[in-house]
Amino acid sequence: MTTVAELMDYDEVLERFDPVLGLEVHVELNTNTKMFCGCANVFGGEPNTHVCPTCLGLPGALPAVNGKAVESAIRIGLALNCEIARWCRFARKNYFYPDMPKNFQTSQYDEPIAFNGHLDVVLDDGTVFGVDIERAHMEEDTGKSLHVGGHTGRIHGAEHSLLDYNRAGVPLIEIVTKPLVGVGARAPEVARAYVRALRDLLSALGVSDVRMDQGSLRCDANVSLMPKGATVFGTRTETKNVNSLRSVERAVRYEMTRQGAVLTAGGTVTQETRHFDESTGATSSGRTKETAEDYRYFPEPDLVPIAPPREWVEQLRSTLPEPPWQRRKRIQAEWGLTDLELRDLVNADALDIVLDTVRAGAPPAEARSWWVSYLLQRANAGGVELADLAITPAQVARVIALVADGSLTNKLAREVVDGVLAGEGAPEEVVDRRGLRVVSDDSALLAAIDEALAGQPDVAEKIRGGKVQAAGAIVGAVMKATKGQADAKRVRELVISRCGE
Ligand code: ADP
Ligand code: MG
Ligand code: ZN
Image 1 (cartoon, rainbow, N blue to C red):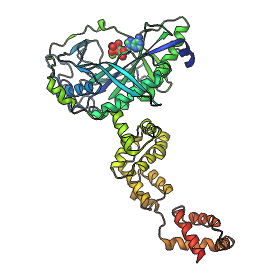
Image 2 (image 1 turned 45 degrees about the vertical axis):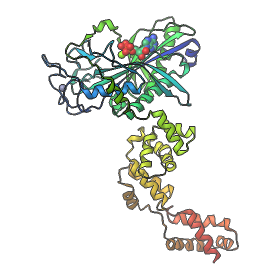
Image 3 (image 1 turned 90 degrees about the vertical axis):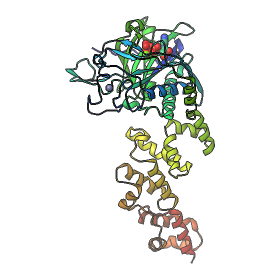
Image 4 (image 1 turned 120 degrees about the horizontal axis):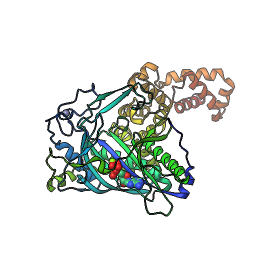
């Protein structure tokens, strides 16, 4: 049975309460192999084909730490301005779930590899919000269960479940924030902006493919409310595995309005995990939350402690990329963008794709304009990300070059882009197939002009008499005759010179 929760008006929530946020982000590393065994670390694949005795938790199988994963963990910690542990261990987190055959997850508990960091997050209006990072620790992913026969894909109501252990043992880094206070009305926006900033940072580090839609970046959003002016935090809920930036924002907002209604009606918020439903935008109750004691954490006896030498840590520090916000500032200066133009680029997730287009030879202004206007419209219309559009930055650069050399008008260029998006091939192929080239041959244009002048002798007379404004009617007729495939400016020049002869 599902009951529809009472919600409180958002503004009313803010009049009565202060929200507190806590974000836990899990990121799957893109190492070649898994965290504690040599199995391939790849997304998907035939179920149970990337498994071995270690990641299946068979008796007697022993784990060994993936050095590359430790390296990525340290680089992530450094990029988040964390301290790096001089000595730390793995811990067993005991609980039962069928997708975790060992019945414990190898994780870190009170000895994380990285701790006490911070990340500056830029909000939509350019305000910078500093997020304190509690810790970043190493752990392993679980397998995947597929619940069959129900309506929701959840275990409730399913007839049977299938288990795929390909993901079991994939290296994960869990990044946990300190409680974020003082965010007020901007709580949902801060949550989204933080996950975006983290995603961009991890992507720049090259440690993960950060695909929220494929689960390689997942966010659990903790939310609580406390009465205005209070200093003790309220009880939090933890909405699990929210898998898009937009959903992070919606889930936080929903929980605020739900908890506001519960508390105002005199009820109490239950500490529990919740699920976010993309289609309704609502969260629903999951399991009541275990406390740390329930997990019976204890140090993992089968793995040696990790004591990264300082020289190694410093050497890894020197491999850090330019931080995303600094890179943005640099590009803004190089391209001469206003704050608003930069923000539009960032909000459309277009920065990298525009950079690639520029690298493929397009001028920055044109590259930017194509991606944040026409292509963004097309992406929004199809409900996909810019990066998922069926056109490459190199192809966009090619279209821009065809406009620059006069082979295409802007209007024709949009048709070429439509053709590429529709799978009709590369820009040149679409131009040929759809016959979209600009009629640039003056003799062909002149023939069309003469025909138009003959068709409208009164207009022709006016132009000959010096009324060049009248040329518009002839230009219009020529554009129509050439199906828009002429350069209107050139046609106008030709009409005027023709009538002046
Ligand atoms: P758990 O193991 O229960 O998920 P974690 O310590 O991993 O706990 O993460 C809890 C997250 O919630 C952290 O980001 C923490 O800062 C945050 N948090 C803790 N208490 C509250 C609260 N009362 N309201 C909102 N967030 C909270
Ligand atoms: Mg947690
Ligand atoms: Zn394995």
